[in-house]
Amino acid sequence: MLELRHLDYFRAVAEYGSISRAAAALHLTQPTLSRQIAQLEKTLGHQLLRRTATGTELTAVGEGLREHLLSIFELVDRVPEVLQAAAGSRHLVHLGVPSGIPAGWIEAYLNTVREAAPEIHFAIVEATSEEQRRLLLGGLLDLSLVHTQPPELRKELLFRQRLGCVFREGAGPRDREQLDVADLDGLRVMAHSAKGEEVSLRAAATATGTEVDWLFRAFSEHSELIATSSQVDTVLIGATSARKWFPAWQWIPLRAERPEHWMRTWAAWAGNDLKHGDVLLGCLRETARRYHGDPTYEFIG
Image 1 (cartoon, rainbow, N blue to C red):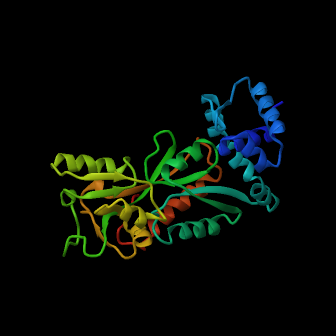
Image 2: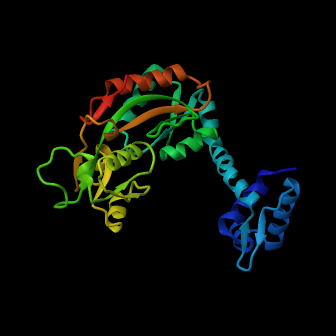
């Protein structure tokens, strides 16, 4: 019979890359852990690990199981908070939030929901839009705010924020209130990904003969360090993230009339049955409509 502890043992071996190191971390003997892994392989009918001269490596099946276990153990880790919410007759909503949401927006949304439905409580999960897509599909999030449109999920466009570029002191163009993609000609530009608005910007640059040296990186807390070490000239980013991660750099917005110069935010959820959906989505729309804390923000209604 498949037991959770066997999966936990496998997870440890996959993480440490060695049965001996995993056994030490689990406070088991190496022969005991080897027997447990062998029992798991027998139960599943697949070889999960391949012994090597330096330890172990995952088979293709083992790698698939490791990926699947990410969702399983995240659910297990949430058992205490789920039970606590149920004991208090509360409904717990796992809300995914990416970086770059306007300052005070999430707090305003939580307060709006609290006034409408005090029984709803939130567990906030900060993750990129792509990570949230995986968590939604795996049932680990109930509702998400994402910056890239997820085709296989239910979604609703809420608002958009103007994109711009940050330049370190003395490196940016002088006396410019806004930029166009042609102004990036010859520059090394760091951006979050090759998806969403970045695709449109690359297409616009190509159409105008603008040659941009694009560098795509995932960045948040260490944004300035990554930009400096990568020797980029500028970083494509929204105003909220610019203030947070590049406080000493000059942010110049891109021209407002071009649609690719805006970063959009969708509400996304999996399936047709979002519990308390009327309240959760209604409050999202209300928060998006009422928010006026950032001049680079526009409600889409």
